[in-house]
Image (tube, helix red, strand yellow):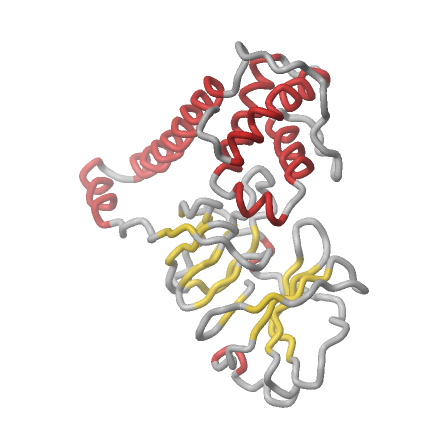
Length: 291
């Protein structure tokens, strides 16, 4: 890669080690290269945020191993100096191939949805249904300042994008799909259940996860002040909890709190019951929700 970006520099430097690390685990060469390329391609859009907020050598290596079908080893970084850099074995061809695989996968998903309709309806009815579908929700790129998805003013804020999605009744992180970081499953007020992937794509879900109806029971949040009110809590995928705190109310003034927050809201991440990180202010009007 020659575009001079931080992402391109990283790929050029780590490509031999990423591929070599998989090959040393018994993954065939072509499969290893494609798995590495798929993981890199998925990380490209959010690269700047991930470099700032994560240890990318650790998180990317976990995603590469998972893409290759190997067990994830939490905390293990990309192996170093496993292979010399070979100009004839670069990432460009494999990134292009991974892009084609990704596009083909999306087309297959769309075809399966249409085929499912054809089973239960005549072609004319199916076409009428297709024509009547609403436009895809608007999506814009915007880095999330907090480490969990949140919802306010008909917008769902994911890791790297904001999706315009009115009438969300409840949503939870899609923990069943570890390969797609940041996806959520949501139930709309109409009763429809949809999955929103990390890039803002929305598709219906046949079976709602139990977590949509399960009320989370968080541990006590330590260090809240007399004017702090705990609004909502959600578990984190890697352990710990994220808490939404309103910092301008007394505990007795929580009637209708979710309909009239003050604007002084923040998310507090607590990796353990005894340790919490500095609060991150949520800049949004109206009701803010973490689920």
